[in-house]
Length: 505
Image 1: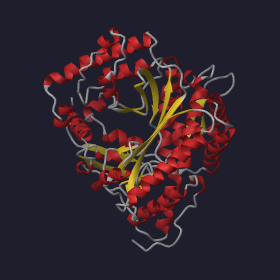
Image 2 (image 1 turned 60 degrees about the horizontal axis):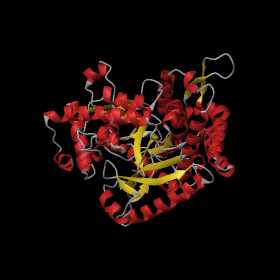
Image 3 (image 1 turned 30 degrees about the vertical axis):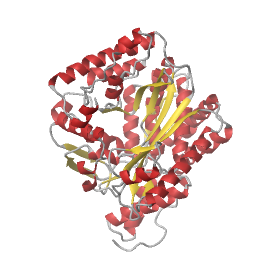
Image 4 (image 1 turned 120 degrees about the horizontal axis):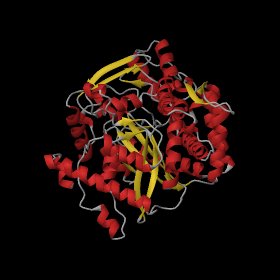
């Protein structure tokens, strides 16, 4: 297996063998579900944040190898490009003052990492897309020096068979091509994990899908790419287009993209893994020696390695995860919707809002997904990416009459969803002080109609009005963002604009 990762070559029999193995893994998953072998409720959550390395000038620094060597912690690892890092926070039990504890843990970790990055004249910035990235930064030669990234790039490029086309029409329009998946590295996100029992999985995943648009509306933080102002949250269209294995003919035929919102509500975690096999050819047909059905016959727990690997190459915004801890299998919902940043307080507020909301919605007697068409949830996600805090959402009408109504996202959040999130956090046992602090951040963003994207665009336009060139304005905005990010006050309190005159660029 390791040799094939290094070599990056697969022969004609590998894909058929891998497909057969995937089917055995799926049968193994079915047996685990039927035999109720999964872990009991643990109320465990986890957190990953992707980060950017930036110089004092606001420009990306391709130094993740050197920085990771200095950090020397397993909590930090490489990401796709050399200006990316990722920090992983160990699982925590939801309850008590968990969010304050997480915030302090993150502050300590990121401050340490930033000090170590400073030894090579770099710093850490949490942001959805770094505004100063240039097309020349996002090329295959700047991918991290890790075999799996090279192999993944080679396989996606081979599957597509031609250049990737980026075409995002927002406030301005960006059209360009790329010979590799490197533009995907511009997308730096927060991933929120929630361990759930099989019986609860579908309800939690459906709830997470239903609120994905709302998460983006209040948390958008990625308005710029390659010098253009695009969508308030430009990561989703960029991610989809930069990993799209479908040439135009397959897109026209309705073949699903590998970066995918989905197309239906589900009734089991099995639905998602089965869709992965049915719709998506293998990108990395690497076979493990384990026979999952033999392991089950012997009373063991199979790793389902091929199923896990294949699942990792289908980029759902809410992804199912199969894992094993202490010899016991478990399922998680991985929420991949949110951009990184702006501050640790903002990240934790987004997390608290999500964990509270999905619990409350999953426990409703008339769940939202029985009253909201899936197509409306997908349209809400698209609208939120485009318009951010000013988006309008379709949502089930309250009361006996049913149907749906279109409403401002901020009104929906303040009037209906924040009280639900508070009730959900109370259900987890989270203390009122944590609930009030972090849900209060979301409420203030709504009240002021302010988030990371709105601050970035407003500050950028102030810099243009002050006479800066476009590139200088983006660099100045990025530097100011970094200063305020490290000060740590939530983004809705940030003053718009630059603190002092900046020399003309």
